[in-house]
Length: 364
Ligand code: PMP
Image 1 (cartoon, rainbow, N blue to C red):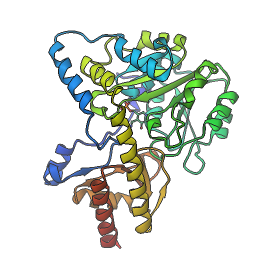
Image 2 (image 1 turned 180 degrees about the vertical axis):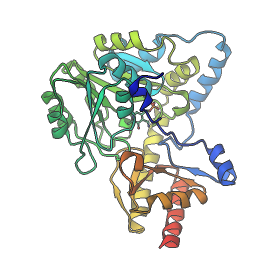
Image 3 (image 1 turned 60 degrees about the vertical axis):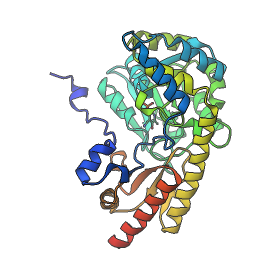
């Protein structure tokens, strides 16, 4: 009964919860290291936990469907208007709402090869034609993407930094891209990992919103802010675009506990700083560890890193699992020779590197 695009969908494959994997592997959950879903290894911010707990007292009430307090705090932090912000049940929700608002079965939606897996899925779900543009050096080939825009193109998705490659484009490169794309084409700049950028450029894109009315920036509380379970993301755009997104999103798409925790965590700058420090040190630890094992990797600006294993990456993934270390195969992204490793705490990174060394030695 389902429409054609939906019938042909294969679902997004999330990582399995630790308990479920532990059961499958016959291992004790406490001995498992999960570096598979680009989660924050620090555990949640205490301020966020306290706010979430306090919000439980109002479980019988509907949440604030307009997310007033969270939007006000975000607007203040980002020096934008609340009317430019749309909240989503994770940024995934927003990506889907964007596709439903701005494209249909007659549209083309452009994204890069090796880009975040949700872009082709949302295109397919609405019957639009997904145009996957070959990557350059694992990153988006912005020239080729601009050239791929046709009369039928409704949306271009750019992930900066990109998942799973960790590649990032400079502000100049993105601006040059925005200059080349006609205003009738919506450009979605997915900045799920922007807080991890180490060159101070994380908010440079905000200034473009007033210059490019066709730009939507999406961000999330799932990564550096450490609230993946609560599902809070948001977009930044012109008020006109936000108005359209707000008409189509579900009226209560972010629950009260999530709203409370996200609002509180914005006041926990120390948590964000620590997230960044742990990530920066972890990226260094992992890269050096891979080098010591003679493995190549794609330098990453995110909280994960794609390591080059070669033809037997699937076997290495399985062997790591048996040792209780979970990473992410990325064959589904067209990268069968790589594994994606999320940055963990120093001891978790060390466990991964030790296990990887053992497994490589065992498999020759
Ligand atoms: N964009 C990118 C590039 C991502 O990697 C992810 C998470 N894997 C998301 C968006 C969605 O994250 P969330 O829905 O948790 O905000």
